[in-house]
Image (cartoon, rainbow over all chains, first blue to last red; front, side, top):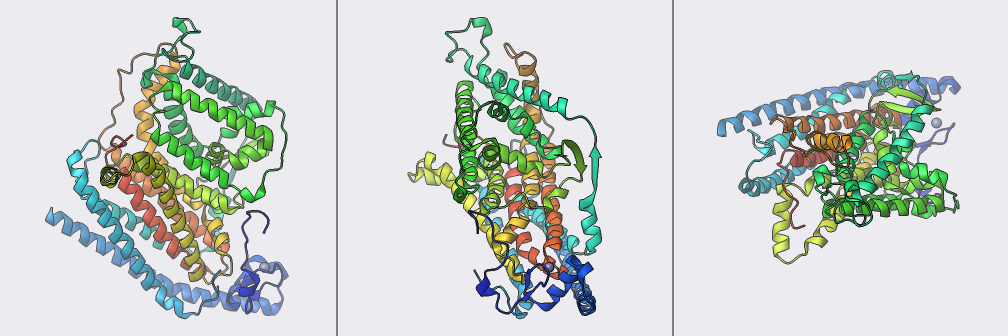
Length: 94
Length: 483
Ligand SMILES: [Zn+2]
């Protein structure tokens, strides 16, 4: 660290079982994250295995996103009706 | 530093924890608003007359920010998210004559402020100048007062985030420093940007507690002192270092300029979508830079907060218990900054955990800091647009005839619905901030779920900021107590 400048990456002692990027060295906590990073930032220099890993990680990410969207839609409905109810009650009482 | 890689188990727990945190935030603010209403009732409604209870307005505002986060999380097409930020247009027009005109205007403004501040009846120049060259002392007819507060602090600041940052050109001190020799001493790197944080907070403190808005001579004295410090600083450390790292005013406008649709690049004026540049944090390199952005947000908030019945209700028992008011004001300024900064750092820390990221908390705090500027800008409009409009007749009167401006007979009275404009801008700023943070997260994390999860704590903090701003904007402005 030079002067007050911000350190970007986690300190070495915390990175014992990390998945480091082969091209830029950025560490990731999970293999899927690194696979996604390969596809997003180093697409041109990938070999076949890495490309396959990227596609698999994308599929898994998409499946998880679908699950997340269901929960998010539910949360949206709950918040909306929660506030509707709250406003109705307040208007009734005032 | 914590252990970064957390077990997947945490994911199952996180939404419940977030919900708990949200409930706690809401409960805390409801309690706060409850006391505010209890005390505020006796002061009578002056400006805002809300037909719904204030706690409901606050909760709904917080809810709106939360909902905009959920809505943003549905937008997961990386190409689309990135495309909005690459919309760039070149607006070609010659900038050189404009630069020259801008510098002249800035220097003229400074000279006008110093002259009309000192050359008042009873001022230091009263004995030297013939009476015909003196200007009125009443604040609303004094050019120095209305130019600094209405024209510059309210009006000009709004142009820096609504249009573009023209301060590097207008800045009369920069123009003067350019003409002076420089020693180019090495700036102590270990200080980072912390001096600008301290100067900004000190500046806001002076603005709030001193009668600078009423007394032209004092105002001109402060301007003269600032001139001396700035010119010496720029001469010692060099123009770029001083105005880029230390001078709080230049840094405030530079930060606001990141929100604006117009910017200068390679001597050309270019256009982008408002807020589009906020997902780029490359201009923030130090911890102190992040603290400065938070300080800017808090400074604008504090400025409004001390003029609310809530602050009066908090401060009255403390002063009656014997705490001196001159201590309370800087104390509240420092504590508030600590709370805002602490909340933001905590959000970065937990965001890092929820995203299971190996980037440092510092780095995440740095990357997401620019999104706070959208909030600060929205709140600045809410706070100053009405102020600027109602003072604009005085400003134009004083500008048209500085020596004997017309009496401000025609005061602009804003309609009752104008209070709603403030609420709308607070919300608009937060919604923009949510979107900016969403796009930043997509840029930072390779996994889109990581990106979304990293935003839970930051959204909670933004909801807290929204409610704080709404608490201030939804109340009538009262006299700042005990000064
Ligand atoms: Zn890489």
